[in-house]
Every structure is written in structure tokens, then in C-alpha cells.
Image (cartoon, rainbow, N blue to C red):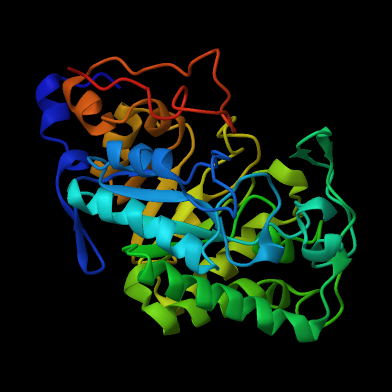
Length: 369
């Protein structure tokens, strides 16, 4: 698709957009990107403030996946929003983003079986729908990359407590100044693991049928929207992405049910990862238009979108918002670059995508002069 400069400049992608009770400067979204940069206590630090503030021209920033509890952690140096220090750290981030005219949500997660005893309180086993270890790894300082630990199956009686962890974290996020939250229902983490028959072998009210496997996610969504309002609550799903040993034998009816039930809760947006996260968009057959038709609210799409693809998706009604991962990470001024047709920065080859020390590869990607 060849676009003229006039087509680009006039695209709805660059026009303001009403999302719930806030107005975004444009329809470009920074996808949640784990950077493993939290300071001791899993608190966002000064570099994190600058990292997000640099990107305030992006219509909506969705801050990186953030733990709802100590049990929710699965990786080194990922932030939380469950202690006073973490809340205070995030407040400095949101204040600076807002001072520069931006809007910012935070993604709330529980990693579930994508964890290791080293990250768990008391070095206990991680929790999951079933006692099935994920075929995946996590990084532990001094040991390097190690296999995730074998989890234990959550007792039915424990699930309400984790629902409440999400509710409390959402309230904390609003206290920290976020404009809203995104519930992480994707990528093999706890809520997604409950959805899928590859990881959920339960026989109680949270396993077996599609309705039962979707129950946990929907309970979290109901609790969070009751706490902070549906107008401040989004959700992310990844119907066919196999990352983190995520497997489902029949995703189409599962996600049609999920979206149909989400529509009753009416979150401020549904954020859909199309295809294999960070990889091919056509890794498995799936009818995204069928689930789009089940939800009349704001529809956000992700994975491998270029500027031209985003302009076309907005123009033809396929999406209302388009989120970008690495392009937002490497280009703090992404909306300007897209609008002017300027080249995009590439990932630095000498700086890690995850973790690292200092500004390099984090806050030193250049903006246009």
C-alpha cells in the first residue's frame, strides 16, 4: 500500500481520539514492554520516569506488565504496584508523563507458572491452573537462564484472593496517577493459562468447559471495573500466540466466548495480539473479524503493524487504536516519525532488550532534531 504524504498527514491515525473519559492526542499506542529495569523493591526509578516521559507524544502509553502481588512475579526487576514504595515510584512516572501532555495506563499481571521459586515469597512453588511446568525459562542473577519451576495448582478457595489482588492493584494504580489499567489476559500468564486447555486440566468450576476456563479472567474484569470503572479498564488477549508454552486446541470458540462475555462488562478497550507475539501474523488460522464483530467498543490491534498497515486498519474500521512494541521502544517520537515519513531507529545491537544498566538502550534512543 503506497500512501502519499497527504494521505499520511490526513490519516485518522494522527487525529485525537476519545477513550472513555480521556482524549488521546492520536490513535498510536505504546504496547506494554517488559524492560526489567525496576530498582530494589521492584520500584520504578528515575530512568523509568524519563523513559516513559520521552514517549508522551504517543496517544496512549501502556506501561510495562506490573505485578499485582509479590506472588505474581516471574522475572527479575519487574515493577509492582502493591507496596507504598511502588505506588510512589509510579506516581513520579505518571506525573511527568502528564506534565508533558501524555496519557498512560499500566498493564496488571500475574505471571502464574511463568515463574521460579527464587521469585516467590518463601521460595514456594509458583501457582497455576494445574501442576504443569511451562516449557520456558526465566533469568536468575548468578545462575543465568533456568527452567521455570513446577507450579502447584491453585485451590479453588484461593482464586477469590487473586481476583482481589487485581482489584487492589487497580485501585493502587489510580492512586499512582494512571489514567487506567490493562488486565494482562495474554501470553501464557496466569489468566491466559486458565483459559487454555493445554495448561488447564482442572475439574472444578474453573476448568473443563470454555465457560469454566474463562471464569477467572471474567471475574477479574468484573472486579476491576467495579473498583475503578469500566471506562478505565482495558484487557489484552492473544488468541493464537504460542509464547510461554501457551496452547489451546480450539481457540476460535474459546475467544468468541471470551469476547462475547467481555462485551457485557464493556471495558474501555479490547487489545488483541494478532498471530505469534513478535513473530509471524499468520502462524495459525483465526478469524479476527468474527471476534471483532462481537464487541462494539474500542478495538486495539497489535503485532507487526507498520505505519501504512495502521493507517489502513484505522481507515477501514478494522481497528480504533494500533499498538506498537519495538517501534515505540526505539523511537520516543514515533507519532512524528510516522506523520513525516521519517526513518525509524533500529534496536541498538550492543544493548539488551531486557535489563541492562544505565541509559544505554533505554533512554538514549534519539528523537528527531
